[in-house]
Image (cartoon, rainbow, N blue to C red; front, side, top):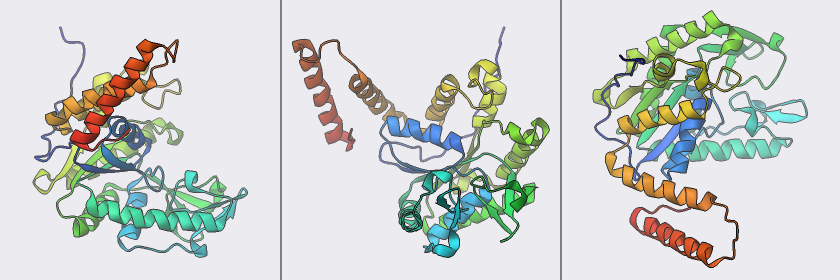
Length: 315
């Protein structure tokens, strides 16, 4: 008797990820979760240069601005609650100094342009179809920065609008990096502040739009992180206490499915070696000055040196 439904995964890329790959991740907080796994296993990756971006319009705008090498000016920022903000970026970039914020935004735009040029793999996690339009500028924002809601109009992007945005993202990225692999996924995080029905509608729009643009022959793919959470795990024990975010067990499980589907088996041994070193570095001995611990550290440093030599991996 089978008590669970396992996801039959889509055919993966002919160019799976390994430790020579250069990975760029954009999107919702689930991108941060997967990015943290890449960091832990010492892959070459960059995560959300403008902070968490929940919807495709925000990601498209960042990519467009990076490719056009936009220069942010004082007209692109505003002061609210004792900090300077930009509607294109997450609040983690906000700063008490206008000059520092502008300097950081422009520095990130430059580095993002280089990352888009050099990446072998672009992973985009879409969180929601709900967006907020600033009434004054008539622009859809990436983040409201706790500006009063009366200043915005809340809208649900249609499937066609999302599809058009995704097609623009693909065209923009491929214009400077034709061979990049693009992997779309839908965040399993439940955006229940919009309502239960509204969250399901939002996710349905994202999934419908993505499947209109997926084209494996052109290196455009879909990974089923949302489906794994909803149909394989489908139990509240796999959520944090807020019943919204996947917990560590769920993230580890989804990562394992991603690894088996998208990472080249040649990297598995390296990942195991990195994991051993990471656990060794996290180890806290009872007696740091003991001979046994000093021998342990010497062996650990030898393993690190070997990985540095073999795979150019640094700790």
